[in-house]
Length: 128
Image (cartoon, rainbow, N blue to C red; front, side, top):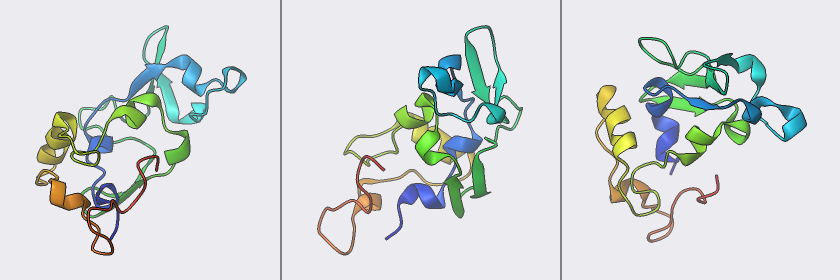
């Protein structure tokens, strides 16, 4: 069973992704690729493409709702790390639901996380 987010990508094509500039500063331990960002204000950057009228993060590969992935997943900024998919940890996520609805996708349910290879097991560990 594939992780439900790998057939989604809606959050990456719905929200502006803004974060403190230090997340793209290697000298300070930042890992976000600076070339994929743009200045939002003196203290914040945004992922390129997420400020557009129809947002789509430059790091998103694939087609929303079919097969999508973040090309910088291990280096993604804090807003991306903090947006939890609905029901992955047993709780709803209004942000996830809004992004999916904006792309005509149904909300995730607790059953979205049931792995047929093991009762109640998530297809990927929470840290993925």
